Length: 306
Image 1: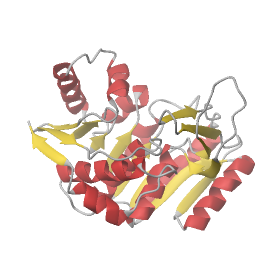
Image 2: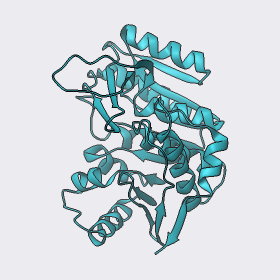
Image 3: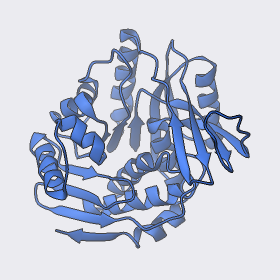
């Protein structure tokens, strides 16, 4: 089983405009609602890929109830920790005339020590049956930076980490299987500028030296790089029509976890994750992918060992 765990889900509104003008009244062509946030996007993608997977997150209030109902409708195996703070509402504004996506993201509400204890206990129970765990998303205000590290001490499963900053640096001490920052996140996490690929490769080596078996760095539509102690790879994602880019990185993490669970070697797992991200790019809702399409796109991802 693959366990996807995170503390900052969202109830997501996606508004689609033919053209969007800031400062004016804009009427959307279509509006969509769904359970989202990085943890639920990755779990949703894994569910569509065929799993087996289970999500673990904290939800609260009427928006948390909506998240529960949406995942129950989809049939995604889930475990919820009750939170006092209402689950945040995020809004995506899609402007078809400019092919842009603007994301409006409130900070998640704080999580109490009792809620963190309940999450930690739930994680220990669920991770006992997991071969792969995905820890994904930022930590709520007030959560100790070492929380992901503490969770990793409770499992022997292969860990895929999608985080940044202090929580990523702390998690590296637990020697995770794979971490997946984007280029900007990696630069901010290490406190250095990555002006060229040489600087990027040095930063990736630093992350390997700090404990990550593999580090994968995305950079929008540009090449993706994957590095272990034994090799460096460049992967070129297939070009796709852009409908909504929000959630692509989460689907990449889900795809990597799925392929890892099913025994694919790391470069092929990253290839599969890129295919999942590419398929998501052409879909409206974050986390939506089609397994058949992902398999076809994976064959089009170019992988070069450098």
